[in-house]
Amino acid sequence: MIRAVVLDVGSVLEVIDDSVFPAPFEQRHGLAAGTVASASDWPRDAMLGQMTAAETRAHWQARLGLTDDQVDELVADAWRWYVGKLDQRLFDWFAGLRDRGLRTAILSNSGPGAREAERHYGFEAITDDIVYSHEVGLKKPDPAVFALAASRLGVVPVEIAFLDDVPANVEAARVAGWHAVVHEDNERSIAEIEAIIAGER
Image 1 (cartoon, rainbow, N blue to C red):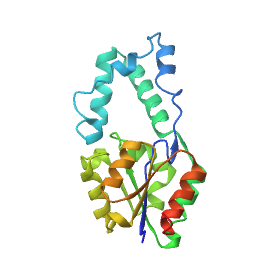
Image 2: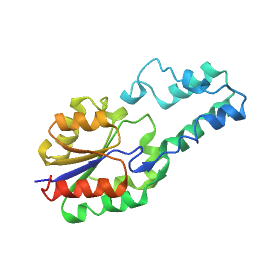
Image 3: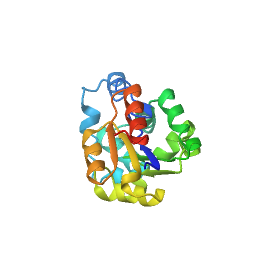
Image 4: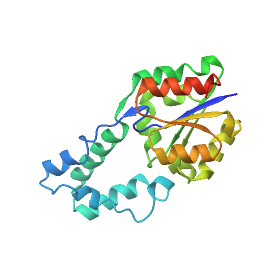
């Protein structure tokens, strides 16, 4: 029996527009395409909490030779891209699961500052837990992060249905004992998770 539903955030609950970042910044400042990506050679893994937001900002500034105003502009563009736009259809369905007696959570590979940047979407109000990789020092597809998320929800792996847009993460969740679905579009994803909840899959 399914007791919990866990969703990813980026490209699932949030619709990400890759045209927002980094191309507009590069174009505004006369930088070649790919310059920002080349400068994102972090010395440590920010998604594992090994760098702070201030350190990632300083790294970009040093690598690109930016003024304070320019790096602030770059960071703002990056966060605007990162949080995307809320997928209201998926959010509303997900929010309604708790009224049906299910526990809900988010499991996200995240950078420092993600919780604060995404707070305006109200994820904390509709979930029992949010596992951000940079806060726990573990990221998908590491089996340990799936074990941690299950433990924090107070359920066993087979009682979890999971939705993520990255096939490798879905496969890792299945290996961990979760029921998992690759997110491609809302109607299909909702139908597949509902089938799992109903015991039809």
